[in-house]
Length: 327
Image (cartoon, rainbow, N blue to C red; front, side, top):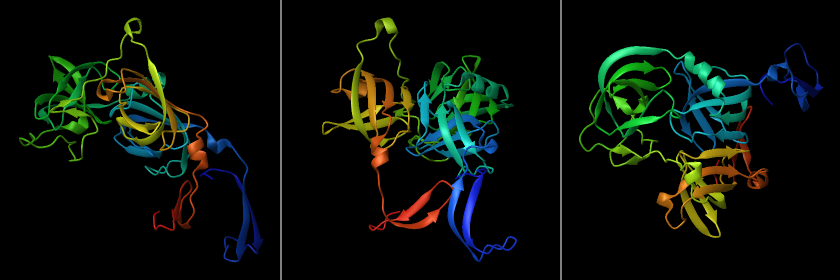
């Protein structure tokens, strides 16, 4: 049931104008798709991705967090902060409230839509010295699928010349315009020995190696590519940059930030996924993950059952209190 759905409500009792106090609803019928359920798009740069949610920042700086369960995911450019993302959904947004929408697809591969949105980008001109609060990549354009032209180590400075409302900053690098994801630049130089962090103090999502960002994984050219291997396993844990799966009572953690991702039903604990990689499972730190793909249908998700007392409900969520006092 979503805002805009056309419904038939069956009830017992007497309805007087808008007074429903003497009415008992017996059933509700959804008449299905109607003119209000046109597919809509939300376009922005990736802020954060978890097992259940995705947060993007639009051109105007507004952040939207969507429930990303049970919808198609397709990432061709990996999963990194600043990637341009297109979220296809039905339902009605109320400001930044996304509870009444259902996401159908999440992708970074809708080039025409992204380019149209990028053309609307407003860049406010500035001229100021800023410092990196963590190691961060420098790119040729304000999208993380653009070429990496360098990096800025934690504590190092650069001249910022423009502020993009979607969270990217224009900087001068080798006498040319370049771009850095903005949550890692500050006007105040970080204290010596301070841990790598975003400007808000939270731990960086960008993987770090000392004071530098972890290098982008370079996939071999087709004619020089070693033999690819595949591993099918059950998801134990997932984050922005890593995926842990179980296979034959063994646990493997892969670095997946630069891989392709294709999920029919989202990425969930218990999903069966197939990981295509180059390298050896004996040396996970040097494996190159080419692609992560889930199975369809997702039997683990279908078979999940919980019992409890309803303590809260919205259009798209239900909160249960279980016997072990968890909700």
